[in-house]
Image (cartoon, rainbow, N blue to C red; front, side):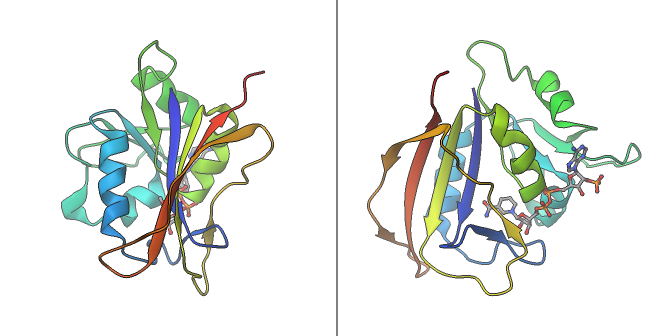
Length: 167
Ligand SMILES: NC(=O)c1ccc[n+]([C@@H]2O[C@H](COP(=O)([O-])OP(=O)(O)OC[C@H]3O[C@@H](n4cnc5c(N)ncnc54)[C@H](OP(=O)(O)O)[C@@H]3O)[C@@H](O)[C@H]2O)c1
């Protein structure tokens, strides 16, 4: 099972200047719950956006996608494509869960082959955002929409899950 996990503002923004432009600890907790000890796959820019002390994400395989064959990412595997990332972690194997954790380029590449979307909606509007979530088109069905909750850090947020509509 391949899930895409992201948080977005009201306009679908996910980033600005290679950072996430809000702080919602409850979303980070949910990310940990959803991704557990299963592999995480991310683009090179998202890897670099993680503070050095938080990478690799502990307790699971970290896979970084880059076109640069020289790239080294301490504690992570570097691969040259999304398909190589999936092959490395056995993404299509029965009983395996794999989480794609961004950023924009990698979500766009992955959404067509994904099974589930785990979206956190943050109730704010980011100025000058430069990274956005992929479009959720009619091949997706909303399966759960949580209540708006208020973060200990301020913003309101809610969790919305989608599943691919079977062919
Ligand atoms: N809100 C959220 O939930 C969330 C989650 C994650 C990230 N973000 C944000 O998203 C932004 C980063 O997104 P981004 O789109 O700029 O970068 P990204 O998707 O994290 O990484 C892009 C890099 O991935 C590699 N890449 C992309 N497509 C590839 C392909 N087809 N084959 C091989 N390598 C490929 C390239 O690396 P090389 O240049 O090394 O070749 C490319 O520069 C940041 O602002 C970050 O904070 C937000």
